[in-house]
Amino acid sequence: MEKLELYIHIPFCVQKCRYCDFVSFANCEEQFASYVDALCREIESCREKYSDYVISSVYIGGGTPSILSADQIQKITDSLFRNFNIVNTKERHKGLFLQKKIRPTTEFSIECNPGIVSKADFSAYKKAGINRISFGLQSAIDEELRTLGRIHTYEDFVRSFEDAREAGFDNINVDIMQAIPGQTMISWQMTLGQVGTWHPEHISAYSLIIEDGTDFQKWLKKGKTISGEERDGIFLPDGSVKMLPSEEEERDIYYFTRDMLEKSGYKRYEISNFAVPGFACSHNIGYWKRENYLGLGLHASSMVANVRWKNTDDLSAYIQDPENVHEEEQKLTVKEQMEEFMFLGLRLTQGITRTDFVNTFHRDIDLVYGPVLDDLYDQSMIEFAEDAIRLTQKGIDVSNQVLAEFLIDSKQES
Image (cartoon, rainbow, N blue to C red; front, side, top):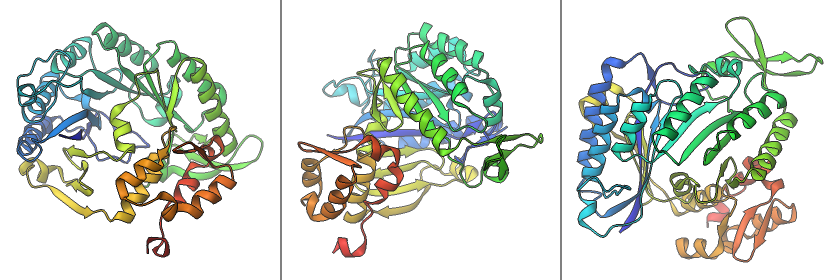
């Protein structure tokens, strides 16, 4: 049986964050029940088509999935277990999958916003078959959280983390954000130190990107630092200005993060992700390795058998007819598949292998990328380790530029 990852999108939030460009809506409580019903109808419509796939991971994201009631989450997970080949630790569901040979436990994650999820909710998630929690903390500094437009405080996170542990969750991720407007090395050290005291199994430490259409993008202007240096800043509605860290400061933060987390027992397995051994996120790894994934819900993306598509971003249309919402279907060319193989796979610290490239595309990687690989090797941006090709630390520092080198022009393609 082929593997398939599932992503479930919950497009609702208490409040839209100032940096968020995802399809999500605030103050839509009256739509929750109708959306969950529509989502379950979409899930049911997939039963026959994907009956020959085994589900390798499930991820409920958003938005803010924990804004739904525990009963609504239970309804979604029950539908997933009835209609897909999933197994969980307690094997409480007797659907399609359990009629077949039992396989290892499927990683089943849900994103939670600190402060709006209770101890009873975590217990209900556990009962529903969810075995991994992902907290969107972003910062342990309340002022930085207010700048981001987050609705929680650090103390809210502490209570939620403790409640999740008491409910029996032994696989917890914490998201934290670098390059927040107004952030300094000292405030970042405080965030990283505070998170470390709770010993989560996984930490995602990623940099803020100012996306088009967000509040931050609208408020982005040039400003002056105390030293008189001109730098990008966020001019907030209250009249205050929060300067963005310089490239040098951001790089120092990145190095500090890597060194501190590795000393604390975390292994960096991807540019921005660190895990205790055995707890790397299999859902993320599947994405970077281009495994099949099916997105369910509003504006969810999918890629199965090298065909990509998206669901509609029209909430009313989705609720009315969730079985017929595919848009933007695209069959990936071999060229596009090879590009993705390289610039997604090289994000992993283990890199990619020549053997996997040959097995996937039936071509030697040097026939496609030989000059690019030689040039990047000469610049010490990549290294060769037996069969593997991976980024060096220098290459990771400028990964966006390095990965862009693997876009194939028409001459290479021929």
